[in-house]
Image (cartoon, rainbow, N blue to C red; front, top):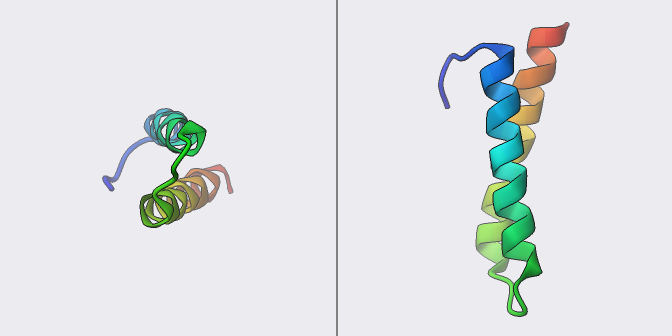
Length: 53
């Protein structure tokens, strides 16, 4: 991750959400990849809300 503005982080969140949603639409889900994406998404969300406080 980078030291980005809150708007950059918001865009990164949207991209990561889209990646995770696409992965979860598959018939056979790679659980490890889904977990990795979920953790990355959590970190981005935490970073976004850290800017807001």
